[in-house]
Image 1: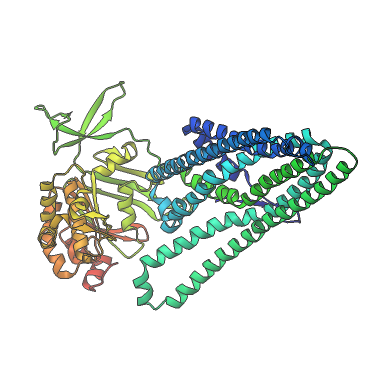
Image 2: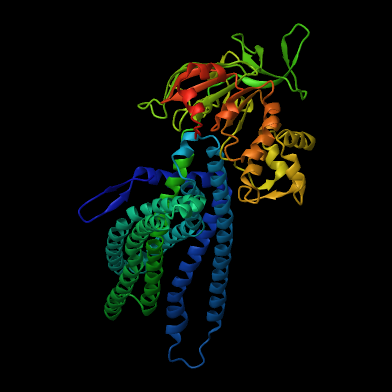
Length: 633
């Protein structure tokens, strides 16, 4: 987030370098992708501003050339005035057309830039580690895509061209004022200097609060998203009052920061406006004195007064746009904070490829669709590789792991799973069961020890290829918006309809899917809320089945399924696990009895290991859990 430093006792606050750099990065993106468009915009802004200045200067010509000389004359010749008016009308039309063109172009540039930013944010988020999403609420992240991006929309489409227009207008008007009357110009500049000093002091006070406002919006969105997801839990435990109090506190914090930010920002326009009126009055008074003393003409004074209005107006516009610029700086900082997040470290160079087995038993890479896979390992000799068949042999060798380096949660974990073996983990909540399976996926990297997959250190395997070789069914099922067919195919995007249906049959999901009105083409929304929890879990299991991985991780996969449904799918699960290395985390000990090995964990350590009968004979922790009919969660 953007940090802000406090200045003098007067409360002046300035954005730090990060906010300024973020805004600079935004404009670099715009210039890089829309150079020609920006060139046209700048030209059109110059034309529009100069047309307005030219129109103001015409007032002097109108009075001194076409009005004053004919005062008191009978039947004056006004033909010159008609042509002069037509000329200035043409100039104004050119200015209007130029304004229309640059506004249209800026809308195109703005939405194109915001699209690129959203694309870059979303693409970058796909590369971020799981730990990032563990420490940031979904609502807060969504706020960056919506609220923060929207602050940039207003600034780039309206504020930025208006600021350029204001600068061009101020410079051209200032030069014109100097040409008309340097004396009146000095008076005007003194008043403008006072206006800028006052506005800058008032404006600086709101900078900190606008940045805090964006942060508070993200926090509030995060809380709302969390409460919407957990509304049933809130009602079950009658936490409505507590939830309302927490929401009120966050809402009050947002209201406070918004009020303070806008309290200062909203007084800037009236201050600038009234100082402009005072400037106009001072020029009128000074101009009158100069005219009385024969310095300057009536047309000069009238034209100069119009120039003063033209000079004050862009200054007022700049001050009015201050809060938009500050919001954009805060929004840009939060957007680039996401883009600058460190991606997952992946130094692996070993990839997974389709293969065929030669007559001599060696593996060979192929582009054909086969059910045989191999690890493609680079040799020391350049451009040479050797292949190791994908079998599903997993070994943990004295592994230590902690989510933070100063707090280790797994201690000296050693285990092995031979191809086709079923390994079960049991233990209380927080014992480290799920953590072990997360390490196999390399969602996190270990602090010490080694994890080998088919004899290969998993740090050397490219993460995407490693995860492609693993299938996982989580306790919390997530279904995407789309058809049931598409949701199952999520496990293998290359799967045919027939393979999807076969996977559904393995998971015993085919029967209930066929009874739905649209079968496999049934549209799912809101995380599959139209299905029961058991049906959603069956689709998740079918998704793992269609992936056809050699290693399968079942993280309490049947915990949300009733006993009858569990018995229905158990045979299908056994078929799914056949000839696969399987890691099972189960809250019902009856589901792990047929495991080849059961690991009992406590406080991040394996305290017992063996098959069901061996552990029962030992009479230890597993025996106590099993005979006590305790349900592990």
